Length: 169
Image (tube, rainbow, N blue to C red; front, side, top):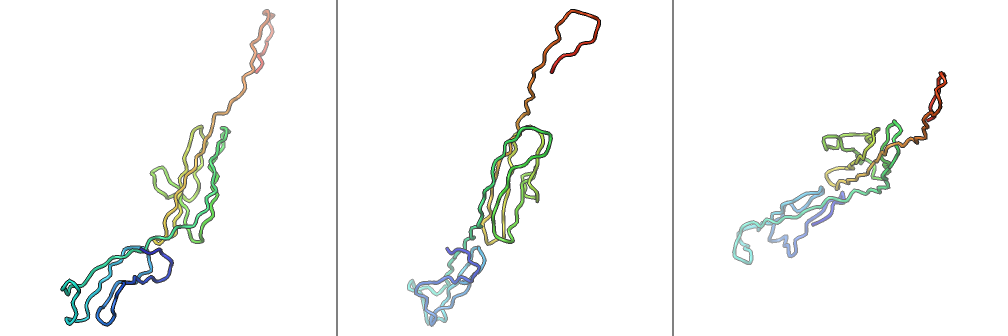
C-alpha cells in the first residue's frame, strides 16, 4: 500500500516487460482501492503457468493523517447561572472543517455547546478535510458543580416583648 501525497502514485510491478505485457489501472492520486490489470500483448506470449488470462492485482492508497495539535482542556466550574463550555484549542490545516456532536450523536454543530445547569457534559468534536485524509476526533468534559452558600443563620432567642425581631442569615 501507499500513502496519499496529493501526487500521482504508480503501482510498480516487478518484472513487468512492456514488450510482452499491457498494464492498466496502475496509477492513482486519491486514497482508495485500485484494480490493476496486466494482460499479454498477443497470443505469442503465455504466463509461466501456461495461461493467457489477464492478471488482476489490487493496490491501495491509504488516507494521509490530518495534522492536528489539540490543546483543548476539560473545565470544572461552580454553578453561577451563566453558560459555560470546555476550552477548545486546536491547530489544523487550512480548509479543515470543525464540527461538534449534537444531541443525536451527529457532528452538525458549528459552535461549541454551552451548558448552564449542574452536571457533567461531554463535548465531542470532529475535524475533517476531505476523503484523502483521516478524520480527527476529540472530546473534553465540562463539569458544573453546585454552588455552596454558607448558612450562618441564627434563630432569635428572647422574651416576648411585643416588638418585631429578625433572624440573622
